[in-house]
Length: 365
Image (tube, rainbow, N blue to C red):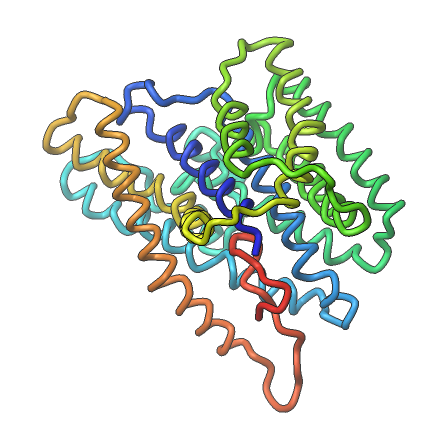
């Protein structure tokens, strides 16, 4: 199992949460470079998807079956976060609070994980749950990989990585950072981010299979490096553009090569990493709606002074809720949806793993 990836995904998700709850910690935990966690998410996704599906594509897994499995993997927790945000709006309005309008032109596409392209909420693609924007690009990368798998030799993969690297570098310098993709004004930048990082993850997987990394770095050191890279303060301007580009194009792929070659030996650490990785996807998708509900409560009953203690308390509570949601809602929902969409008759389909947000065993189903 990819315990180290789980641990890294978990710590990166926590830093992203800190980025989205600034009023709770009054800026004390506002880590400027934490948006680069998205590059790591896409990178690890490419690695795990290639590990989980390459042989299944070779065995005949079709695009639509793959698309169905990926949608089932991502949609239940996505719709949970979406529902938390949307279903609290009527009560908030009854209490006299100003909220987003429940416009069908926004709500209906949102149900199907589609970005909102109408003039709404300052151009946010997913106004009810802003972090959801990465799922759209995640699926774009997944589907592009599935459609092109048969012709994606190592040489062609290298070309894809090089071309997309140029697109990502252009994105960083054109928009002056890689903090893009979630708004209509810089929507195009999301494609540069996902195509390089996702296919770089695929390349790391293939390179790791051909030439296993001979260097063994402690997972704890790798965790510390991730925290340092995602919390470093870089001034806006050329330094910001260069830092984002070098991290995305050079440091992170090398980092992934190292991280996928080593696992913690302690069973307790392994369990802790699996726990963090398992809850990270749920935490990523429901922390913003939960924060919105808390903000409505504070608006009605008084807002406390932001502090680290308040933010840590919220993160701890949101993490517990995320673990419960993943275990008692997401898993049963995915099982039910899989059974519901199972082909009738004697048709058989190669078994599909849980997905890029889970730990994967080579024999997992």
